Length: 247
Image (cartoon, rainbow, N blue to C red; front, side, top):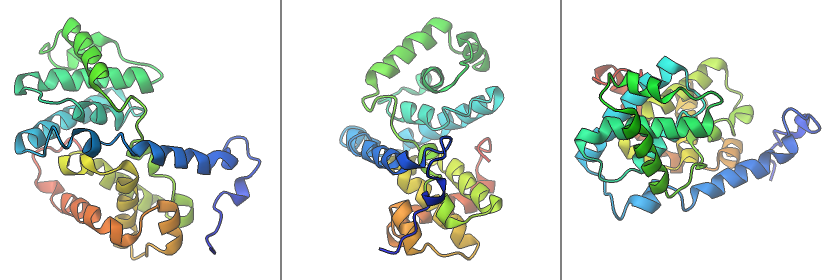
């Protein structure tokens, strides 16, 4: 249909594995069906202000921990694990947040910090046994498994055809990371979050979301507008938030 093949020049390159790229992204998109929080939890855990506040507090703490220990590989999965935890009492928020970081680090990171490091960052508020036991509970309760697609794995799909520079790419990543603090967007599929952040970044720089980007990004601009509106509001209010660790 006149859409350029962005992998045509990379065929035969063993480092890029271009011949498998389409199948890989098709598989990632297929994982979004049936594993999203909206499909698994919406009937049991409706959006509430207490839940939203819990998400905001714990994500801020987890971003701080990620920066301190440079755990970038599991960025996104730990938030996914926590958001699947249902009915967490306020007194257990830090414990569940810490346990979800331990669980996701074991799954994604090449070098996982010791449990003592997780306990240290909590200033002794959580014990080693509690963190280990709660991480096992998180694993048993995480019905989507530990391989759900997160925005990190989806955000690069349309980049080659978008011809973005480093500034536009960095802005899209910044918008995505700000969006982690928004509980409302935790129900949005990662592929849609990635496409909306890129589309918003391009719009801010005067570029269009053309048919080719619609093809590779899998969403039209009209489909992305509601998510982009939420993200734009987050960016505009970023300097007013008391949770500044994500900024």
